[in-house]
Image (cartoon, rainbow, N blue to C red; front, side, top):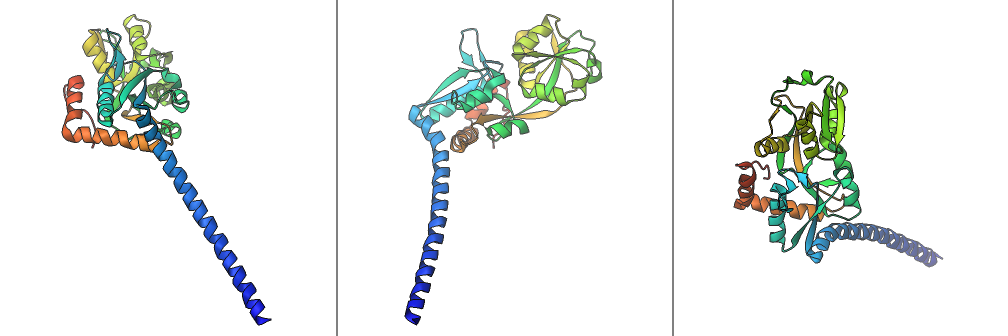
Length: 277
């Protein structure tokens, strides 16, 4: 009787151990494998295809835009080209609608968004963002002879802004944004053209774009000293594509250390304006 009782207890104990061990190993190994698979897939997919599909608004000077030869060029493009060269793959540039960029990314039309993409809490909810590589701020541009000299002068005025941009969101949430008439444009180029033609009173956009456009276009425009808030540029990926994100940013770090990033920056801005560490 006692032997049968001890045998039964032993059997129950062994079964419990086996069940507990099976659940633990199954759970940890499957989740670990899934995490590993998800992380590896994004980078490996790009390496296997031999190309990186970069999404951009091809009018965003000087980060990425179409030049007079119908070639997409810019600071971000040069950086991406160098990253791809070091990874042994080709860069494929894909023009996208900035207002629907997240949809193109999630649908797999592109592998990343790399085009003066400003970091924001809202964007972090829908995409994985790399560490920042450049600082930026949002500014108002007016005509040189405009009577607008400070933010309060914008009250009651018509301000153009790119639809779907962080500038659009910042303007909507600001105090001055509630006191102006907003005109949403498809691109910053359109917005600046509207200003040049006198169809709006000001444009709200990235200082990087504003300063480059004023310097290179010869248009009689100026930037107001008062802006709204500083920003940072980063590269956007699908939320699960951590391996690809990490590899690309690590390559930018290598470029920073060996001086290549500073060389590219000097070409476009006259100095090293990058914040990669």
